[in-house]
Image (cartoon, rainbow, N blue to C red; front, top):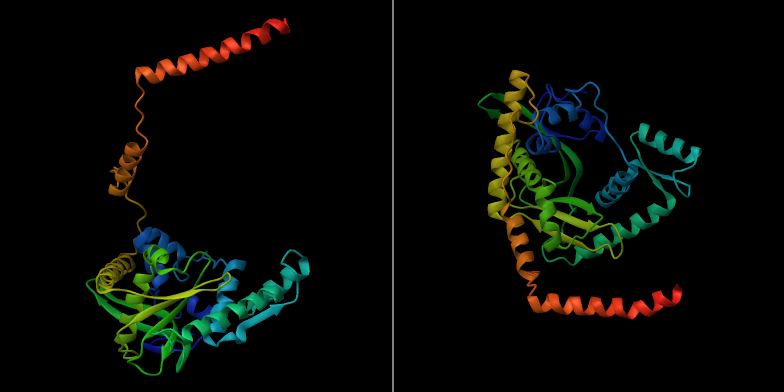
Length: 322
């Protein structure tokens, strides 16, 4: 399937990841590789550019994908496998067959926990002051396709939106699961390390471009995947969004240049001189102040006396052993 017009589409996730656009398109995940690593890494990760590119799937990803599908009501692709684990040949064969059919394999025991997790999420959202309407009155997992103009020519872009609300003025919600803490104070760092700020800007930009959304807020519903399955709702402030918009602009320009010139550079081919990060110097200085050792003459003499006493105390024992 090839998509030649900007718009909203409902297609299987596997087709989305294969990139059905007319030319290799930019997604948020590829853009993050482009910005955080190098154009060469982005080329390697792109299904249309690298003929040997393979989508790596791990069991831990299956659990997150299963919770995601169940949460959004698009659980028809979940395939429950009756087995204690994936170690037997039969269990592995069923798991691989499910993936080949574009389904999400999950063990029976894990499915019970995932269902409990989703129920906990729904209960917490129901009483949330700002997110009680999250994942309601809309459509799950829709592909947005649009074009961006750059100084180096047009760029095709794509995004797989978790939930597209029927009301164009409603907030956008994206569901994330985490094996660490969903406490906003703790997870705040992950927002930027995982490129969630870029995702929020990129998705909102694309949806506005094709007239599919004109709301104000793009928020993440972040839930822990272990009991008590606590969740938090995290949005980006104006300064974070402003920086994210700049990142998107840079990614679009760099992607367009690389495509136009068919040049995908790796890391710089010159020595990178590393300076001390401010936080590192402050942390070391703080440690020096805390652990400052002042060895005085008295301290030395006292240590010598104690040591000499130990030696004198052991002397009779040594004589007797002779």
